[in-house]
Amino acid sequence: MKVLLVGGGGREHAIAWKLSRSKKLSSLYIAPGNPGTAQVGTNVDLADDDLEGIVRFASDKAMDLVVVGPEDPLAAGLVDRLEAEGIKAFGPGRAAAQLEADKAFSKHIMRANSIPTAESRTFTSFEDAKAYIASRDEPVVVKAAGLAKGKGVFVCDEPADGILAAEKIMVDKLFGAAGSTVIVEDKLLGQEASILAFVDGRNIYVMESSQDHKPVGEGDTGPNTGGMGAYSPAPVVTEKLMDQIIREILVPTVDGMNRNDTPYKGVLYAGLMLTQGGPRVLEYNVRFGDPETQPILMRMKSDLLEVMVAVCDGRLSEVDIQWDSRPAVCVVMASGGYPDAYEKGKTISGLETAAAMKEVMVFHAGTGQKDGQIITTGGRVLGVTAMGPTIAQAKTRAYEAVDAIHFEGAYCRRDIADKAL
Ligand code: AMP
Ligand code: GLY
Image (cartoon, rainbow, N blue to C red; front, side, top):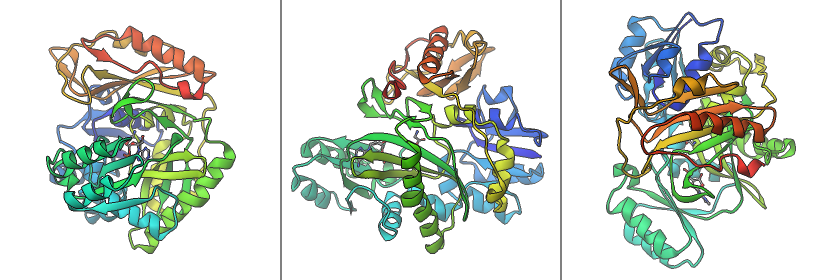
């Protein structure tokens, strides 16, 4: 099969690497890809928001499947446009992608289907949001309703901070139009878990659990990022809890999307808070998580391409996925300063040494190539991922590999996976 993968981050390097191991694959293209994906396929110089160019490329080159990695092209309707041309595409169409792209829509789906989530109110006027937040004396979470690269959420222990957050989003328009609506919700307490499932419109196949680390600082301090590291499995997600998550969250979500006439296919990602009262949905994503995908796919033994085709064909019930029982840990190496301003263009060394280490994969994210060198081009630069017999050993291996890699200003959290130890 000829496959085009859309995207160019760490998630896409992991997906490309995994697809490249499929016996069914004849050629793999990645648009735009990164120097990591270039090791396992052919990068195509098309931005992931160039829907026109992507559809034309897929059609001209007679792609058998297009896999869409990031949320933006999904929300913009890339899958609908590919399917209109008769091209098989992995991911939800525009209407179903609103589950991530519009948090007011996702709250509506949750409410309509009794899916457990935080109590919330939706506002389109700053004055109304301000009055509501000021009237409360508990901590609040203020969220831009639209897409904000994982940075549109402010957890505020003081109402005054909540008002400032709403002002940044609604008045200063920090995230542009994505912030014209805000959700103000109750702060939930507990451990977080990411549950990703393949969904073919009807059937659900849950992947192994994982846990992300959103805040930039150790001990979960500082502003939220796209994710600073992840591990899989997450021991807090026991078998019993997983059953509850499937029954109370995944099944009603997929059924609810059908009832709403927005059937869901692709990867459904439920970001959960495991509270004392049970699991609650913090958000949905309509795609693989980044960086959760890196450890999850490293543990997947089955053929990802076969699974993706089964999703597109509505045959997920025929698929069985095998997993490596060993845990995997991914540590994100970021540019100093991220998620605020940071410098780019720093030369990266030690990549080969790290990649040669046992059970280690160095997934590229914000990297580029210049004068034969690999340089930094983004906030999250690399996802250094390792497997081991235990989480502790996987963690040690991942940090050994991190320590072999150097670039000016490199930053990583040193406590990835500690919650599982
Ligand atoms: P989201 O993009 O909605 O998943 O939010 C990003 C992060 O903000 C989550 O991973 C949590 O760490 C935090 N967060 C979001 N909503 C809540 C909430 N209601 N209570 C506590 N923390 C939250
Ligand atoms: N790691 C969180 C996300 O992919 O949105």
